[in-house]
Image (cartoon, rainbow, N blue to C red):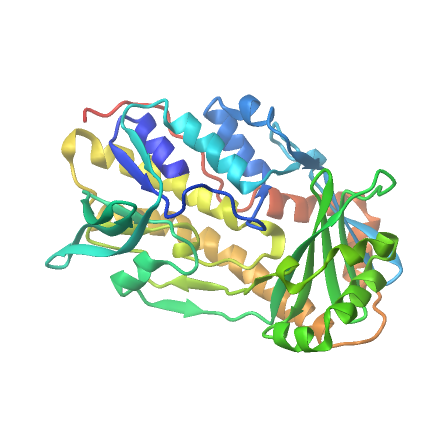
Length: 391
């Protein structure tokens, strides 16, 4: 959606396909980082976004055992918005779509599912789609696969990926919020479990991190046992854990971390999770995808002007621009997954923060380091000055 907006802004004809009738999906990534908010500011649409309902988090706090720590402080970042914004992803997508529709060269087609690719020899020339009115091919000078970690596009293209594995999955759920709940973003690590609570205004979006593949085992233990685990990790919830009436209230996120060896071929480019599935650690997946989109637009817009094609060398530039930031983020995520999360999930004991975490929480200056890594990342992208295309 962001790439479509940026290309249409440059006068390039673009069609975005969405397989569902709307964007409403619960427990999709809802974190909008300062780097993304800065991009929206560069586009002149940030103030409109911030008028929509959202929550702002300026510090990340967590509790390990009985010790509560501030782990990251965003208030010192050199950007306008010194906070994480939490907004339902459907609201964010609707917002971007509305801004993109201002441009006459932008089209959004709902209920249009990409089921495969169209080829002319080795070159991709379009996508096969399934729509309300039947199946049809949509031809294009360039196809961009942004269809997530289970990408149909990358599978149809025959791309090879490198799978780095993950020791955990996440069980997402919602529990009502009361006025007396004073925490804004709360992570609890104890008893060999990790529980995250994100303030969504009138409810908590809760995530229980579990061992990879353990969901069936948890189901066999029963819903009462799960409620008891959550109550032990967040006792202030009290009887509210009973709001989890059935397993339908629990949504499984199967965590995977992978990266395509090659993100492109003639007529095709993959970005976001379609090119590199990210761990939920840091909640940076959406923001990496948007950084991909901005870099892609900055490189593609000049190449596509006046009817020119996006050659493989142009597509290669996009991968070269975004591959190193992706590798760095995934490397940090893997270190946390394998060095911390795997150990936590393998223990049943009461937890206490390691020395480095205690130092991080005790020294305010040190809290700026994770804030910068999470909030801004490496090699931030900026929107290129607008030069309209001739097509």
